[in-house]
Image (cartoon, rainbow, N blue to C red; front, top):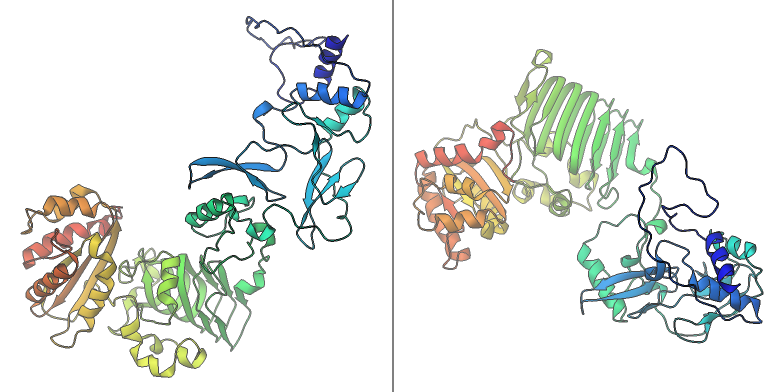
Length: 573
């Protein structure tokens, strides 16, 4: 009788994967063909000791059955597993109570759930049938794998038991018990880090998650990602909902509009239907669109993707972006940093120059927007509709104050009036002249290997701002990441570094490779002397960290190979 009852119970409570073979009383559809397989021998049903307590008998039957696909390896409700890199072991943590253990966690007795007080954040327990609430964790009767749950009431067999197990959907928890929770074991809510994140991952380094998880596993409070001690974590469901109106300027006229650093923080921004406005976006953004604007002066901080102007007239613009595009624009003066060629369509009276701007947060914002100061193709516009108008260039040395009002007057807390004359020198983007320049002299190509890449910007700016000799002009520059070794080998094919050519090629394939082309009086001899000093500072007995072409012919060879990808539209990284 007991084996028959167990068999009936098993068929009634089968919520997991349906078996491929037929069950009793079930007909297989005629259109389905199932290959015949040899069924494994069925073990003899175990006799279960009948108890006078009907609830205990149901619990014993229930634990002998499998209700889900996970089987014995399925973690109890609200438990997750994670890897602790400190000792190389797997540990378990509860997403509600914040408990953690290195042993397989014990489930709550049947019908009990854990939740948190929305006011205090303390965990409490409630029973889904009786609606009983308590601060203390309900325990199982007995110990070991065969421990029986304390019955809340007698459960009929088998219909209501099956319905209770099937009705596992979430219900609203009752209010917490009255009174304060007594002190006990467990991790406070503030100690839960992003290892428990169930929503969208924040924009933070993965190493912070690993450190937080290791600290939580060790039982210590997790440090904040900023290193300033423990702080309340911010989850996706707790974040402030974005207000679209905070990320657009629309229908404004004759105003000065400013977005200070931190107010955009990598979001998309829209500027539309503005007239005679001074607009300052002093923060980094995902992309910026400018539509139907007239006679506006606009500054756009580092933009991770594109800046797109459409249906505008008489615009003065300073912008740093990955891609710059225009369509149906009449009258545009722009100082640009753009990684790709400016894309021009149905645009007339457009003039471009090199980006020249500075405020204290600019360089850090460029890093967040993944913009390199060496990747600037402002002087290579591609005009899709030349019949609509040609593109010209602004006079060399044009500053941002010739297009916009001074930043020190619009936002004096970002730039002081005394700093305005130093903006061209403080600008983190080297001023490039392009292929055509009025600076006379010979050309020279300089290659910065990955070891000296962190110094390349400082050295380049020092070259261009030197007043001890005739000025040097930067024609063009480019930065690549992880180039092929054969590319560097061919680049140095005519160099005098034949002994170290192989090691330099190997190094170039494992980091940032930067090349600049300069022009000026006695350029080759001056750069050879400067590069020798740089190598003594950085190389430290290893292969050269920087290399300068030794002749105009070698410059032609190296620049032709290094910048060939710009002309062909390919990348080496």
